[in-house]
Amino acid sequence: MAIADMFGILFSLFAGYLLIRRMPNPIDKMTKAANEIGLSGLSTRIEVPLVDDELSRLAKTFNEMLDRIKTILKSRGDL
Image (cartoon, rainbow, N blue to C red; front, side, top):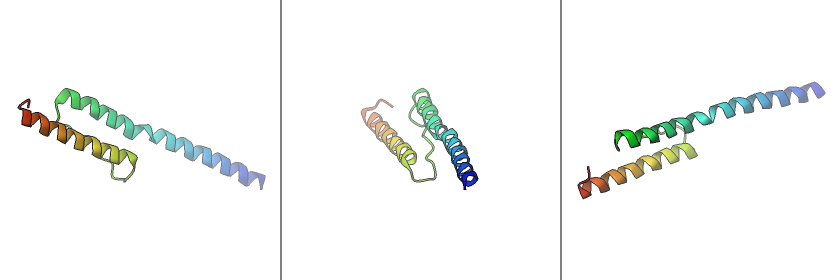
């Protein structure tokens, strides 16, 4: 029984480590894209992940916000 418990703990630690290593990747991509948007104008968009989670909703909302900003700037003649 103790060996099975130890195996379960080690497996959980390893799985947690793998998940933590993957978490920053989408956030880093979004940050890089947001920085590029400021340099290249308003035509760049953030890639929306295929899964429906908080990050995909954030990316979609950010892209929609950029569309609204671009529309406002065009209507004012600033673009």
